[in-house]
Image (cartoon, rainbow, N blue to C red; front, side, top):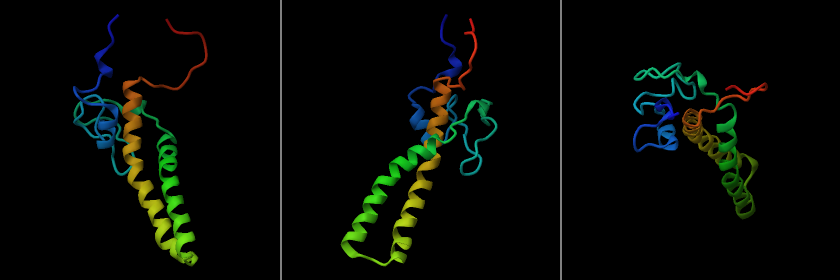
Amino acid sequence: MPEPTEHRLPAGETPFRLGVRGLCPRCGRGHLFEGFLSLKKQCEVCGLDYSFADPADGPAFFVMSIVAVPVTIFAAWLELRHEPPFWMHLLTTFPLLIVSSLALLRPFKGWLVCSQYINKAAESRFGPPRS
């Protein structure tokens, strides 16, 4: 039985490229987000229902993993090299952590939503297999 075309990406696109730009995984023209991190109910171009999408804490995990190491290295370097007062870390390290995290959250959430679409990801269900 041939694979349904419903879960194919637009030509020349990848889940990462579509997700980072916040575009619909089916048509590549509609938008995923309504606001900063809230998903729309459906695509305004092709009508794809986004209720399948539940990236949960995935974007936060990836962002924390990526941002934590460089910011921690910067904070350690700043402390060991200059021995600044605590408030200097509040003016440098803390904003760096917040801005970096916020800058990456939306692209990672878009990427995970597009990946869920193309891989037909769904919650696990216990019980007899469907035929």
